[in-house]
Length: 482
Image (cartoon, rainbow, N blue to C red; front, side, top):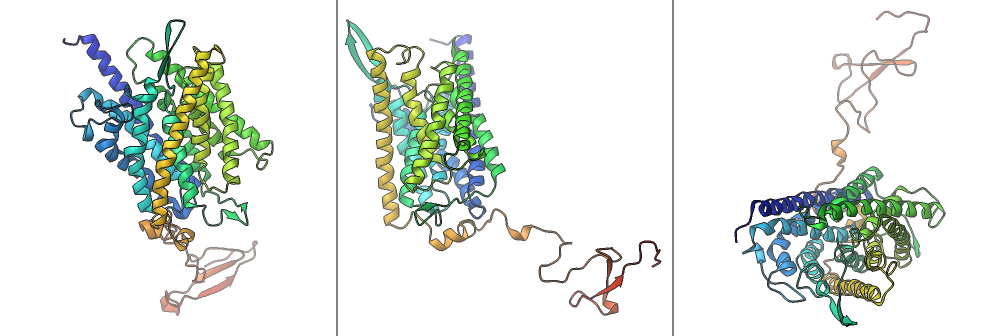
């Protein structure tokens, strides 16, 4: 049966919506790049930036070849899909769907690169990036978001002759994207070990990033991108109720981020882990709040979003402190932001869901929904941890995981990439003096009461043997004729 013009228009609008939202989420890679570059030391800037680029490029190839087929293959079972490899036979109207989910996969990979920054071998990064975006992440996506997935289908039970369904609630990926990425980051950071000098005699030592403004700019871009990350997960805009769901998701994302940021900032100022109004703590608290809202931004009231974000800010501080206590070095606090915020976000939905949440309903069904979400997030963590543990242990045993101490101390940019982010040779100008040469000034210029006059070659001076005559400066009340 041929589609009507209205149906064609609706389909086109939905695809256009996915493409635009996907482009905005793609721009989040810029935010990750600035945040990560600002949070590492200058000697490793090129290294972290090329990883941000390759999250996109490697992710695109891996997700094209087999990732999308594992996630959304039309032929599949509750565990994995197996059609559309290399997008073969994929209907044209599904290309927008591929693009939207590809940018989600790239986000999951970026989380890991930040947590393992400044000491990881580049070859190791290439391997785990392909493994994560091509297999680990797509399988979880299939479980939670594909019609055949076991978490998506859930379980059914009968009560009072009424059949009830219990399904996994994770609208924009607090568990699917952030818990998965945060778990792999935790395992990777633990196995690769802390950076040299991060812990001295058991005490943590701050290894500060080299530019706070870049980190702040990255935070702003990520806040902007999260509006599309969460709002775009409606995946449609042309049907009744779509715009309302998108708007609610964006409003709740803003409120969750705001309360998370303020909570983390206040906790820091109260003296938990130094008593400052910390910019970086505030940024990470805001990101954690938005991560937590990914799961239920379409299903909770705005005041509940504020509460969820507040608890997420507390969770961020707790996870960040725990990482230090365990002596696990995470330069970006990626584990605290994504695993801490994502775990709480998944649990918050069955609590605050405005239609079926424990806070409103309190029935046995609402508790079953909570139990299913808890099961889902624990299985996601177990899957991610088990596979990444095997991968990182193999890389460590084969000595492919970590760079040598000499390279780590001197920086990865030059030996690994030959492109320092801030080459000293590019600074200065033709008028600057050499550090080893005597200071020279232009003829007849006055400086500190004396007038240095350069001798030119014909007067005995020269480039190879410069000399200066010093003429006493005249009295201020006198005039001098040259």
